[in-house]
Structures are given as C-alpha cells and as structure tokens.
Length: 207
Image (cartoon, rainbow, N blue to C red; front, side, top):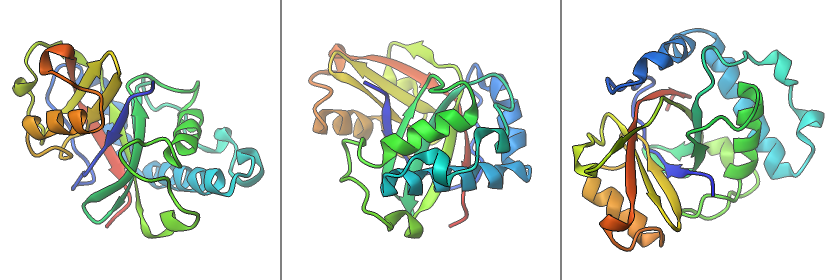
C-alpha cells in the first residue's frame, strides 16, 4: 500500500531542520524559481486528464517539457486543498517514476480516488482547489512519535495494515495524528506501529 497523507500547508515553502534536509536544497531552489509554476501546471493538467479518463499522453505535455528531478530523486506528496482544508492527498516516500514528471503523473492518477480519508474527486472539482506538491527528504526512524514537531516535520506511521503520513501543519498535535490513524483503521495500539520523521519542502499554488 502506498503511503497516503492529507496535508494543510499554510506557506509556499516549509523546510525542516531535521537530519536529511540537505538533500532537499535543490527543491528549495525549484520552489523559488520560475520552474515551480511549470511543475504545478503539469500536475494540474495530469489530474484533469485522470478525471477525464483520457490517456495522459493525449492531453498532457511530454515529461521532457518538465524539469527532471532537480536533485536526487525523493519522495513526493500531491495534495488538493480548499482554503486550509485538504480535499485529497496521496504520496510516497520513494519516487514513483524515473522522472519527476512520471512521478507526478502516477500521483495524479492515484489522487482521483485513492485517498481513503476523503471521497473520490468529482469531474471539474479541481478547478476550485489548490495544487500542493510536497518533496520529502530521507526519513529517520524514531521510537517515540511525540518527539516530532507536527508543525515543522513530517510523521510516518507504519502498521501491519498499511501506513499513513502527516505532512507539516496537517496535524496540530501528534496525539491527533494517532487518533486519525485509528479512525481510518490502520492503528489499533500505538505499540503496533513503527514511526519515522522526515523533512519537507513544499511547492503550492497561491490561495
């Protein structure tokens, strides 16, 4: 099961100081460059293509028109948000394609109906939603999830039933994140899970 997450990210760039964040430096540069807008536009077109159930190649630019990974390939989370509320989000701590474009294309296909925390997207609905792309750095295993600062760092909860990730700002407290993992049927007891934290750089359309 791919890692799934819902995210509420309030700023255009959120960077953790956790170990491994150095690998995200090229992604910080992407966020502050003009290429960031092209990446967001590509993702939006791919989501529309997935909702229309048309072959992506027939309606979207080729991956060669999109910047390749600006640095070492990393995990990516794709979200759609309305205001400060997440409408849908899917992602993985591992790249899902050889290029950034291929990874965003796969996540666009998944976001349409593969987020168990939200109802499937309706055709045309993304027109009123913001696209958010979160680049995730190398995760670090932790024994106590309460060590995580949920406003700054990502939290991954891994259980025998699957996994769920909470991006910076999505969970006000770690306790809330654990309750949410229980609500969607992944976590029975805190001792049943293993935990990881990871740094994040976020690219998003303006509110």
